[in-house]
Length: 144
Image (cartoon, rainbow, N blue to C red; front, side):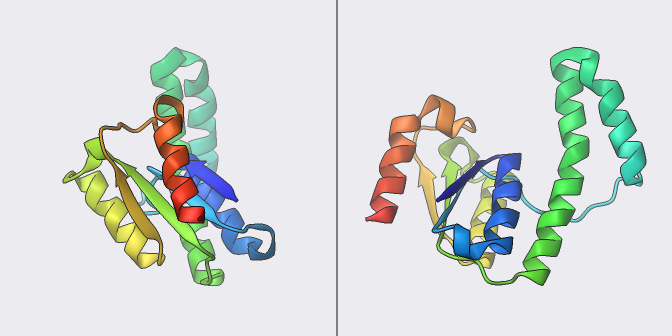
C-alpha cells in the first residue's frame, strides 16, 4: 500500500502507475490536483527560484514548494497518459474542503481516476498528522 498526502499524492500516484505490480493499493490524502497550467517559467528558472527562496524561512519554503508543484503536476499528468491503468485507489478529503473549489476538484479527481472517495468529517488538510485514528479507520474499512 502506498499513501500520499498533499503534494506527496502526486508522487504516490506516479509511482503506483509506473509500478502497479509493487503497489497493492493507493491512498491519496487531500492530494494535490494534477493541473496543467503554465506560469511562464522554465524548469531551470523554477529550480533556481526555489533554491533562492528556500532559505527565506517558512514563507520562502511554501513559495518554493509551489514552484515545484507544477513540475510534479506535469509528471503526474504525463503518467496518467502513459500508464492509464491504476489499481485500487482511495481518495480521502478533509471536511473543511467540502463545497470549496479544492473539495470539488478532489471529487472530480477521484471520479476521473476511478477511485473511491471519502470526505472525513471534522477534519482539516493535515489528515495524517492531526487525525491519524480517523484516517486509519477509513483505510481499514476500505481494505476489509
